[in-house]
Image (tube, rainbow, N blue to C red; front, top):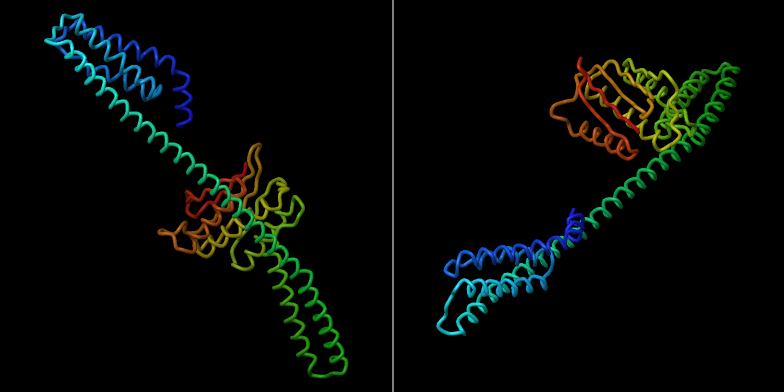
Length: 343
């Protein structure tokens, strides 16, 4: 804004010069017409102020001198008589000194104003750069976090699950050998195999939670299907996905953030909203990709608890990181609707 004002002043500077001279001329004419008994010297300050503030200190001094000459000439022409020729010179010097003091004050004020604007501009630039750097670091930290989660998820799936599978196979072989000899320890071996298989299931679920979205464009839809299936089984609620047509997301980071938003919304709906039915909708229009999560719970708690408030802030931050807009509102018939809209 200050730059725009400065440009406008620079463009209109010739007009301001003409206006300043016009004001001096009009005040001098009024000073002459009213006679020397009525002083108009203070009205010359308008022209002096315009000259200093919008044109420059040098021009302000020039207008001060011209104003003093016109003021003295108007009084003399109007018939002013003095006992000594030094009196009008003294009066002119006093008036000129007064004008120059005003010029100095306005020039100092203008300099301070310009310095303040420059400091504000520099501070704004620094804050903008700092905010951009923080945003970049936040995105980088999220990328590192997601990358490490994917690595750990892959390690769990490729290493730990394979190790558990081999252990289960070995246990199964041991169980069969013990059963072939009709030994009672065969039942204990079977229990060990069952425990190992449960460990495989838990590890796979943990792996999918850490690395939910595959690299393919339709990985998000597959991950959301597994998410609603897992939520239905874990929370004992009716959780389903509605996706009338394929909505491919080619960017893995965007797909991962959308998955985390859906995951957080389902958890909030069940734990805080005590919902029994949760519906995820993934759709795409001509201009937007929309992910919405609707539940039939009690709605947003009032006041928000610290945990639920943090969840909402995390969802909003994730949405902002991928250039989306998040809205959380109460449904007309109860419950909560969380919507993330991507351009």
